[in-house]
Structures are given as C-alpha cells and as structure tokens.
Image (cartoon, rainbow, N blue to C red):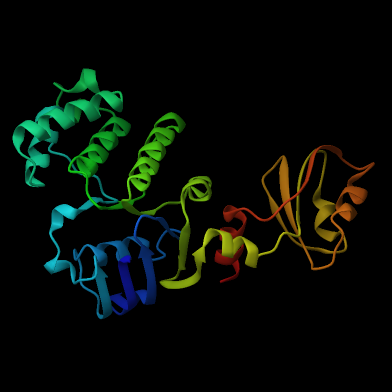
Amino acid sequence: MQIVEVEQVVKSFDGVLAVDGVSFSVPAGSIYGLLGPNGAGKTTAIRMIMRIILPDAGTIRVFGDALERVEKSRIGYLPEERGLYKKMKVLDLVTFLGQIKRLDRQTARRRGGEWLERLGLGDSAGRKAEELSKGMQQKVQFIVTILHEPELLILDEPFSGLDPVNTNLLKDIILEYRQKGHTVVFSTHMMDQVEKLCESICLIDKGKIVLSGTLASIKERFGQNGVTLRFEGDGAFLRDVPGVASLADYGNEVFLRLTPGTDPARVLDAARGRLVVRKYEVASPSIHDIFIEQVSTG
C-alpha cells in the first residue's frame, strides 16, 4: 500500500513555479527522504500534502484518500517553522496539544512525562517553553508530533539546530517508528542521515524531480567505479588524472568518480610520491556526492 501518493502536482506563487509536475509515492512502513537545496520546493510539497496550501493542479492522496477525508490524528506533522505557546509550562503544553490530537488528559500527561524523560527534558517539565534553549524547544515540538503515536510522520527538517547527540536520539526514535510498521516522510539537508535512514528518496531542484527511487537502485545507477582518497599535500592535480570524471573535495578527503573501465589503481599510482596517502578505498558515491553532482548540473 502507498501511504502518500503525489501525482503531477503543480504550485506557483505570483507566477513563479515552486513545484512543477512533481510525482512520488511513499510505501507503507518505509522511511522516505525528500531532498533538495534551499528553495527547491520541498516544504511547499509537504504543505500541500498537509493541505496547508492547495495545489494548482495534480492530485494528492494520503492513506488512499483525499486528506480532507482522513482522520488528522493518524498523522504527526513537524513543520519547518517551529511554534510553541511560550508562556505555558512544558508538561502542560505537551498535555494540551496531546488532547487536541484526541488523547485523554491522563494519557497525554503520562506519555508526555515519559517522553520528556527520554529526551532529557524531565527536569524542565515545570519550566515555561520560552525559558528553554532552541534545541530543547525543538525536542518538545518533536514530542508533540509523536505523542499520539500517528501512523504517518511528516517531518520538515527534523534535525535542524540539533547537536550530534540529539540528532542521534531522534534518529533512533524514527527507526523505532519504522520498526513498528509506521511510515515516515522527512526533508533534510543532512545527507549522512539520509544514507542511514531512508529506503527511498526524491531529490527536488528548482521545483522539479531530478532523481528518485530506492537508495540501492540510485547508488547502483551511479556505479561503483569511484575512489575515496584521504591525504596530506596538494591534491589539485588529481582532477587531471586520466580517467577521473569528477572530483568532490572535502578538504582532507576527496571522492573521485572514474570513467567506465578506468582502473582505480591509476589514482593511487598518480598519488605516490606526490601525496602522503592516509586512506585509499574503492567505493560507490555517497548520497552527498550524488546530491552535489545532480544539483550542480541540474
């Protein structure tokens, strides 16, 4: 079953196309990544799925039906723009918003307390939301999103502003939801999280899909003929090594995509005597590399 189905959706603002004929579907029980640079149309697509704004053309179905006929408590939505009632105490706030999602007060308060403890906010339950740091407020917002145990989670940049420890914590919770059979759609710029979490992705640039499919099929499509090289020295010459099609530079490490049939050992041979090589690995491109290449050339 496809939990979310987006077909040929179009949306423009003041004559500018924000989403241009986008189509994708999200299978039940999967984690689906919606990727793209700033202004690509990701958030617009998510807002149309949630019927915050309506498409100019195309159709969107959630749980096989139009969203207006779907019980909203089946969905948990974390918007890009966070918003909490700043004067309310944290546990009271979580309880109140849980009740809006049709939980009874006792259940909402019990679950809220448990989630606050798990996310390291137990000592802040009696503080006002405005007294929390930005990262702590984001964790409260995430709790509100999942408190009612929705079948579908739609998360717009869920890791934005979080440190690595809390990013890892949210990642574990998202995986738990998938393991329970729930479905997750999220947008992000954090390609390492995409690589670890997603079964399928959709890359949008300038309102159009430039790449979509399962992670495995996409990586297969872009081939295995690449080399990761970590070194000391000036590696500028590596771009000109015969058989190097492109080079992604990360400072102390590069990924070189090779033309078909090129022996990866050619790169190591070229580096000998000119660089101090700390790592050499024949590898497929990462999602980060593919993202950069597709957005840069799209």
